[in-house]
Length: 211
Image (cartoon, rainbow, N blue to C red):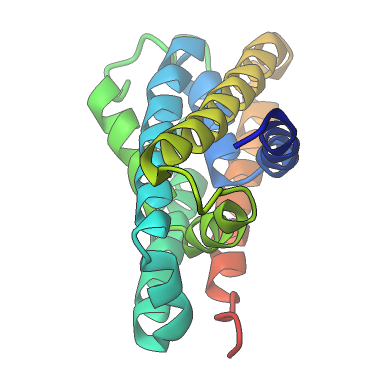
């Protein structure tokens, strides 16, 4: 794998990662509701999920999803259902997300819970699996050892994702001071909840390639 291929992969991955998705929204939401440090755990969960999806794509799961409508629909429904759940839960929250003292409240989720939620969101996104399946073959040198190339490409992608989510979380933390008014906080909660549901609907509307 030459430097030109690595640069091209990094550029394509950066463009794909910069586009906001469920992981971005989760990082922003956690940063606003529980403090910037909480977004670290969800970002790590997302990164772990991406690593698993990358490995699955390399092992042929992406091709299986593309060929099996039943499996594709099962993963799609599972992922969309979880995003719907996150959205509805956000919409039904009684307390303002950014109310004073919210960060220190007893409802603060544990790091493990933040990690697991982001991990599950990542691994149940069939779009990401299909993306890895379509992307990797374009940059893999078939004449070289597969494992080192997999680790390099996946490491680049996950690292870029962690940087992107950290930046979004930092920006959200900086904007928090403007969003502490209860009325505005409730509006932000509604926007976050509705956006989660929108992402779920987008996944539910996905069609298998070639279907």
